[in-house]
View 1: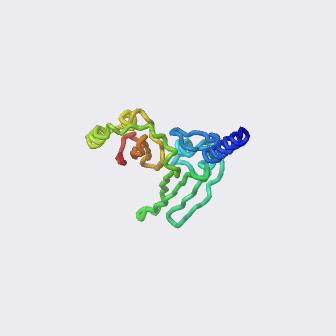
View 2: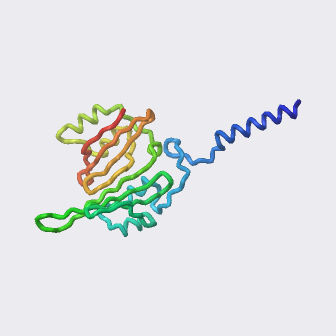
View 3: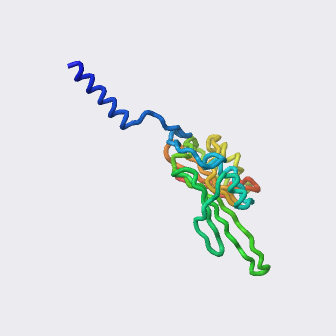
Length: 197
């Protein structure tokens, strides 16, 4: 009888460990799985977004990443390249080419976009001061990025996009809500913000 009971207990533990795992995943900023290691030498998707420069050539961007981007699509007026960092994270860069009808000179606009699972963004922001944020955004003096950070609980935003004229940040809270803001890189002022909370 003891052998049968011991066998049942061992089988139950085997089933339990099979279903739940043994806790070998690395934990992200909010407890989400981030076990896959990035192929980029600059780090994870968010660290690389901080290091990439919109004023660089593709060759220099590849050096920052540590490997070459693959061309995703192109036309006469744009090209899109992508770096796959893990199975579920990547960064795209889009080069838009504009030719002036007056001078016939071509200028280039660059935009980076981070692709990542929702649960990789830290969920520590506090959106309880949204009314104050909105009031300051609508005022004549506006709101700087650092003031915005203070109003969401001192949590730095996660960069999810970057272009010549704005940097996109994202914040999440523990209730599953989010807040997105776009910041002018020259003035460091928040241009607009929106979200669900």
